[in-house]
Length: 230
Image (cartoon, one colour):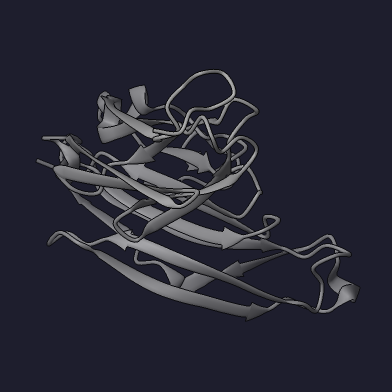
């Protein structure tokens, strides 16, 4: 087998470790592929990360099913591992995936929360998986490092919560000097109550440059989450 300059076998290894709120810690070691962009895939969620100078990269990923298959394209290899995540279906997920610099942002307004209140979850107030484990609300993770495809994923513990009501999901796009008047593309993913995911391609032309500094809302892109309580 080929060896890396540091004496490791070139064959990439992938480790999956289940974590709170049906998240998976994913660790890639590809000793012969340092400083290289790798594609991490799980179901329809796909992000890219660059390895460090030793060929290492790691990320959290949401488990979208109880048998969570993660694959990584590492150089000429595809590495595949499966993690068993028994409570994966107790969590509802919604994701937005884009290429290159971030234009779109996920916002969840839980149970009538207004912008900036505790129940407004976004990258500036992302909260933690511990909050979902308590059943009191959701959290957001940002995935990717801008070397390619990145994502934001919002998770709500629909199977654990006693709460009733609605989580309103709104995707926003920043209108900046760089993005004004430009076309922007993304993919929106959402777990459906019956299992599986729906995927929607998003293509918008952002408002003109007289509106730079504004935010534009993409209202009906995602279905609001309905919490039935228990």
